[in-house]
Amino acid sequence: MSAVPANLRRESAPPPPTTPYRAVQNARSGPRGQVDHVLLGVTMLLVAFGIVMVYSASAVFAEHLHHNGQFFLVRQTAYAVIGFAAMGAFARMDHTKLRALTYPMLGVTVLLLCLVVVGFGHAGGGAARWIRIGPVNLQPAEIAKLSLIVWLSHSLAKKNEKIKTFSVGFLPHLLVAGVLMLLCLKQPDFGSAVVLLLLTFTLLFVAGARTGYILGTFIAALPVAVYLVMGTAYRRRRWDAFLDPQQYRGTIAYQLWQSTISFGAGGLAGVGLGDSRQKLFFLPEAHTDFISAILGEELGFLGIAGLVLAYGVLVWRGVRIALRAGDDHGTYLAFGVTTLLTLQALINLGVAMGVLPTKGLTLPFISYGGSSLVMDLAAVGILLSVSRSVRS
Image (cartoon, rainbow, N blue to C red; front, side, top):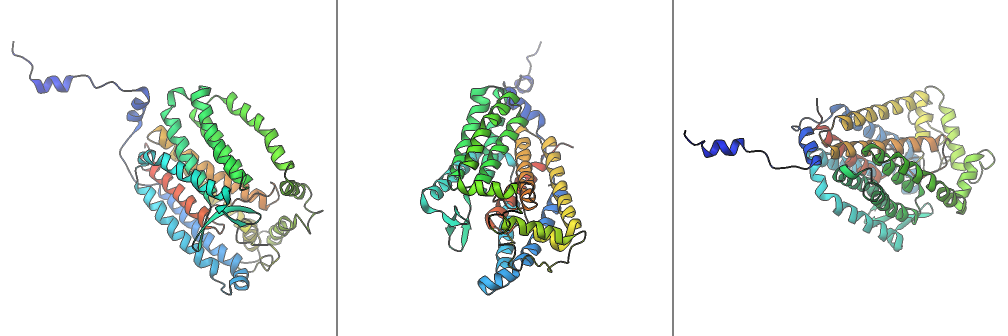
């Protein structure tokens, strides 16, 4: 009986052993396809609409402050160009390659946040949250949100088999998020710290961490949050303004009161694009965190409903990508980015309408701001990258 050829023996040999996590990765991975065109389209529409609204809300203010009515329009357009370049770069990249950038991104983020805290930050609105680089103000807290998502996605996927343990699957993630939160609170930036905590809880829940650990930590954090709010004078004043804006409408609740007037003036269909009265120095810096109030005044309830619908489409596509991602790492990235954009939109709209206490968070793709716009578009680029690996 003749011997079996060596090449056939090699082909019939069993494959090398693999870890359970790697087996899941291999089973779920598939060929790279096209990006999610619906997500790309709605993002481009939101950015274009945001540029229009920034110009509408800021033209008079810019003329008064800079003697150039197009000042904020030009800068926001430039930020959009940079943001789309970042989005395109991330969208073309295989999202698994982000794992090699995880720790460098986290390290740079911590360094930038430390520079702000130790005195290199540029102050504005009572807080030092920016690092000035020439004509550009960089806000490290915006980078921290995306860096945390990238790190959590990498770590949770790597620790997939031990995610239900406290010492490996839960505590390390909470500690890293806690460091970033603490650095944000030292600026101070309470809103960004809250977003970081909620992002961490969401991704831990999605990854399968024990619900008892998450709920226990949330309950333990409540007294700390109450202390941070009531134990700080300016936060306590914001809380008082939130509880009774009419009583403080001429002082600490002035911006909130003017915002609600703006929404009320818009009615069903609005007063017309560009015809807002509140932006004529009644609502301070209307092109930033309270831009939705000008949108509501000029385009009315229908305009706000259309904006919410656009965000709804974005959330739908993001969740769809997460559920169909080709690997666990992609799933966590997609859920993280979708959660980030959803939280910021809900909080910003809630603050402008008086449903939530005032927080310094921008409206994604709409508010004026370079750091937030560029990082939001970079985040969408990561989401588009994950969409290329979705299972049909």
